[in-house]
Image 1: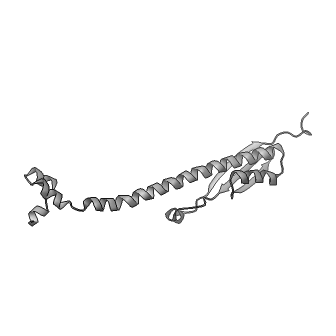
Image 2 (image 1 turned 90 degrees about the horizontal axis):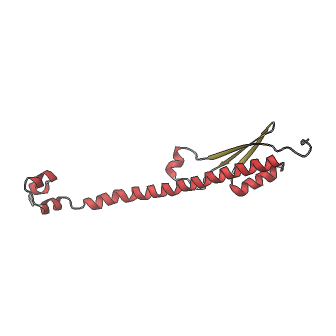
Image 3 (image 1 turned 90 degrees about the vertical axis):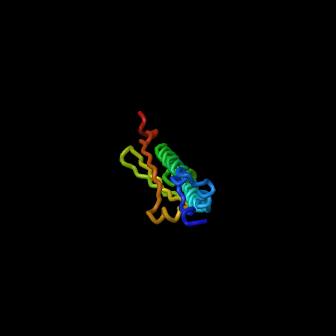
Length: 142
């Protein structure tokens, strides 16, 4: 094969080069493309699965914040309300704040697994808040 045949391009096909000469010059291109695309696709798949885990954890935090706020508004002690929140979002940090009749609950959770490149960017914490007014007690009702 001469050097002219090895350097064929699609435009050379239009000028009369044979298809076998072009195929010979593209030998190994599919292997190289596959070697690049497979790791990229695998990385995207793992990132997508991790993102689904974040969505689930966020929903757990929202549920925990709502449940804790409702329990405190009903008059349950903060420790029992936090236990309810821990069942909804295990391993999370729960903060209860009262301002007059308003009850503010903040639930913060950290994912169990974080991909190495994402942890290098910064910490990943999910936070959910809920605010309710406390229900009147029997002493407060007329």
